[in-house]
Structures are given as structure tokens and as C-alpha cells.
Image 1 (cartoon, rainbow, N blue to C red):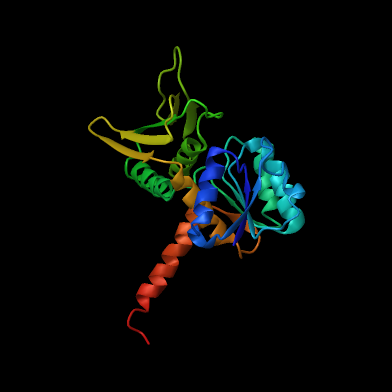
Image 2 (cartoon, rainbow, N blue to C red; image 1 turned 90 degrees about the vertical axis):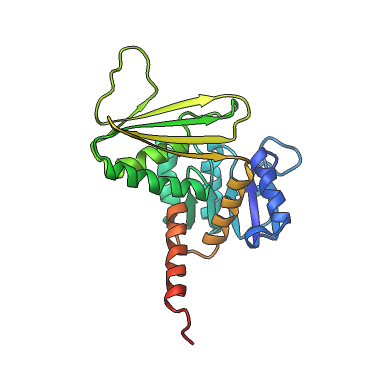
Length: 258
């Protein structure tokens, strides 16, 4: 599988290249693209090569051009960037009508599990106060993180009357339907997300900590392998894990059958 890596000179790009060289998830070759480095072509069109799949961990500002190139050349695409505008999100959905697009605010399998647990806890404690706290390195451009918004949106699926409150200042008494989201930026923290579900008698705390960026690169290449031969559509970490679970259930149901 030949992968076009958008943002190849960046931190995530370098992690992806390292994994490709190791043959992770069936990747065995890469094409680097980076608009801010003279070591690589600045745009996908300048490469002169066609990959099997595109993986973009660069910046939200590159998304439109990446999607246009993917659609024009019929190439599946993984979008791992965050901080998209509503117009860009619409562009992602439109592109998915023509090619397979994997879009997730977080490429970690652990975060996918956290999403499921947060929904389960919110459903079990419908009157609990829920707060989301996320911590990232001081260079992160967007706040709150895409993952924090994913968590809030997932909880909103079981709390349709909820509203997201981004930070607090001054007179802002908590309302029962609030899902509070707080963003912290400091040092070199890769990424931490905590969901607190609190009633008058108890608190459940669900937490995920990313130790290195390698986990996101692993998820990105796993996603690339997953959609490499998929039909057009919008895919994410949940759809990938659900399909893997179905495959495992099928294999288990046929154990011992010859």
C-alpha cells in the first residue's frame, strides 16, 4: 500500500513515515507532501505519482485541496486534522459521495472506547453533571480539541436536550443540561481527555492519556488500510471498530466448523 502523507515534515508526518518504513498496517511505500518544507513537493498535484490512499495530519487549512485532489483522482482519503469550519465539514461530506473518506477527530482506538464508555455512563446517570477536560501541548492551534467535541457530541446522542458550554467566566451558574468543556494548553502534553460524570452521591471519571504521537499514526495507517478498497462513503473509527467486531463475532461463531 503506497500512502501519500500530507504534512510529511511535521511531527505526525514523521511518525507516519517511521511506521511506513516498518511496514505497519500493510503500508510499504510513501509519497511525502508538505507545503512548508522544501524537502517535499508542496501540493499533491506536484508529486507526479498516484498513491493507494492519502493520509492528512497536516492542518485544517489543507483539507479542501486534499479532498479536491482525492476526488479528482479517485483516491481514498484519511482526514486526521481538526479545527474544521462548517463549510469544510460540508466539503468532507460531499467528497465522501465520490470517494471513501475516513474522518475522525481522534485516531486513537482508546478514544473510540472512551466514547462508548462515556455514552454508557451518561445513559446510566441521566441527571448527572458532565464535564469534559482536555489538555494538550502549548502549540495546539484549536480549542477545544476535536476529541473533546467528539465526546460531547457522543454524550449528546443520549442527552438530546444537552448544550455544550465551552469554558466559563464570570456569572455562569451551571444548568442541568450543560456539558462543560474546558481546554488547557501547556508544555509538550500529547493529549489527555477526562470525562467526569457526577451526581450528588458519586462521581465516575473516565480518562485517556496519549503517551506518544505514535498511537495516532498507528490509527491513521490502520484507517488507511481499512478504506483502501472501500466504496465511497464517510467512515470513522467507530465504523471501523464495529466492522472488526462483526468479523470477530463471525469467526467465533464458526469456530470448529470445517
